[in-house]
Image (cartoon, rainbow, N blue to C red; front, side):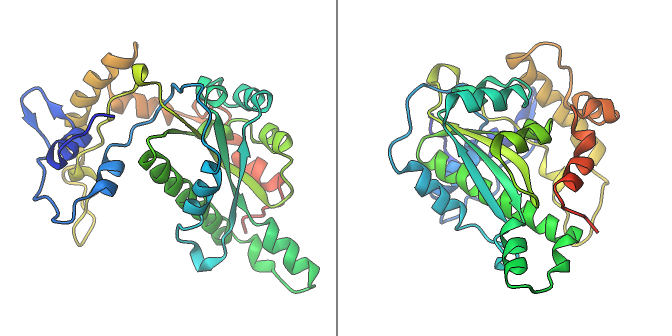
Length: 281
């Protein structure tokens, strides 16, 4: 991958309008290092080489995942590593037919997993009613997410590419059957991992200005509308380079939120979660 200076990495992350840089880089931290470069260089890779991962890579990635923080150290997550091509193809069928699910040598499906503690408490016949409350489910979601993101950073530091697959939730019952998930376990997100195709490596995708997301002392939305307008200009140029038919970030986002019909099947998530014995009290 191309190497950037700290300042250019910062400005690449926020993009530019034709006439100005919207988020000029602040002073560079004196301890700026390779970890910063890995994080700021992130891009979603959707085209992978057929090259298999070296032996031991999966286990080191899981060690990175388990090094993430865990709420109350309950460790309410687990992951299914899928390398079988036929299984990846079936998961792609219920995940929006995304090619990277089949193409990448490794697909990781991260799970909000309350089964271990539920089964343990049942085995020793102790009360664990608290596991049925929504806060525990949220803790499991956070644990799984933090673990997944640690893997993204670790993988990209190894020059691997990654891309999240939220569409694993489009048809959760099918994913649950395919992965043989027991009650109290729910698939949260997939992550494709492999060597990026250097001929199809995407640019760094700009993000909203810090004016839209950074609040000092108290929340204020005074700058939000202008920040969105500026971001639309930046993202219109980005989208034109990669796809047809997309106009602005704001229109794309609002279309995604239009109603249940725009949620690609995920309007049924609560029903699917309850079917897994996760009560959300």
